[in-house]
Image (tube, rainbow over all chains, first blue to last red; front, side):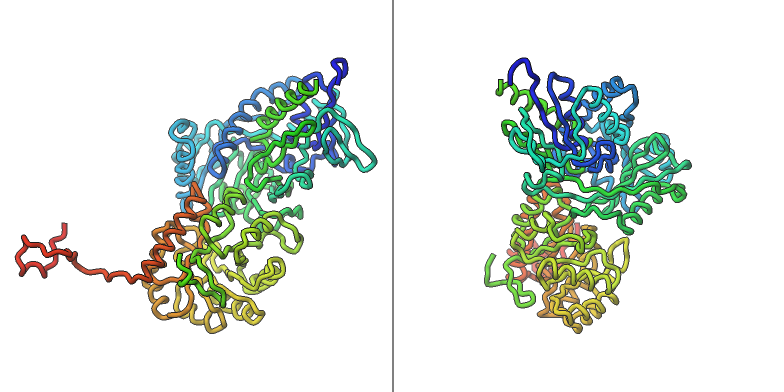
Length: 357
Length: 270
């Protein structure tokens, strides 16, 4: 590479990670190409099916401290990045930091206690003020639609982002920034090379963000099935993401500005992309109904199924080799982890390019 | 643990008296480490919701197989004998084993076994050559019927699945043990603490099967080790012979300051 020509970067995979990374890198003096096997205007991966929750505390209870730490970093980055993106495109991404609410039915009350206990055990006393116990009155004031619950928890710092606005906005930002977009192009990632069926192309650095598409290169990468329903209701309006705790199926419900609510719950150890099962749709519906019976008249406008790319320890991974970087395994934490991961990759790219010079 | 005291099930001998499930762990890696720490040789797994007909390679299943344990596929979530039998056939094909934890659920909320459907499914599966380990309630008559249709091992619940309540109906459970000597009895479900598992082994039950108490612990690997020790301890205590409980405290040395005519009286209760 010479100082006159820009370094050439290839990013494989046009999901959340690939788009976000391309957008960040395109703000620098780099020549960027984004490869996507499918259609960029119709994202097919887990990023499109997801509800876009950014909830470090809720995930900490089920996972590792590392997820929480990365999640807090991402949360800070989202605040700034969503503003930048809105400024650049002139449209809103609907990043909302209004906290999230946890409730459980009377019979499952111990789930709330267990959640609190696990949270305190993992965090110590430091950040207890992030969690507020709610009685019926406080809960009703915060979320009038949850009036039938006697108690709940309020996780003040949590956020969510409307992925169905974010992903198209990132795409138009990439167009504005002059990123070369190569859709419907299936590729293989190698050191300093992107290989197609009919040939190959050289790059200073290749970054593989393909999720499950990168299965051949990452041992133990697996897909964990998730099923999501989108309902539309005029009667019930939630103000923020709500989680219903239950010993077996916990439900999340994330309200959107257009009166729709994205609900999901399932985690199935299976790389199965077939449509949502009757059982799952019943479980989701009845859990939603139990939040507020007026949901019974909501309309099911969409169901989505996706497989989240996960490693065997369910932690995200970054493989750093000269000329080839792999990022993967964001599992069910795509929106929670992506900015922090992107920032780490940016640093690695900088180091690698300095070494080439 | 001494190999001279093996757990014999369907003609196979096992050193460990702890059977564990593979669900609900924070990650597959932690699941496998926990299985190792538990020293279990039999592990259960479920394929009810995984669309088994559609896939032959599943990274998670491969990972479970690599533990080297005897796999015990279950029919979790099945509500009718028909469903359970069909799923059992699929499991046998996928995991190459006749071993089966038979679940036929009668109540969806506390996952209570349906005793009628259970006997019907067990009869059919035994005829099909399965080695059936039925998850049942602690009812003596039900247990006898399961033995009658050919089950060689029974797995009565301690308490409903996932409740962590321990041995809830001790009267029934102790009677089962007493009335069915020689039948391997595995306490399945409801165990929340190592002390409860030890209690089951002390009472003469042959083994314990559990999942939630380990998988949902803050440190699943640590909890797996704790259960291993408790179960070994409970079994050793059973073999060594527990002392009988007495109605009064009996000091092992004579209490010299107490007149002899009072020494036979109950001590005043504080």
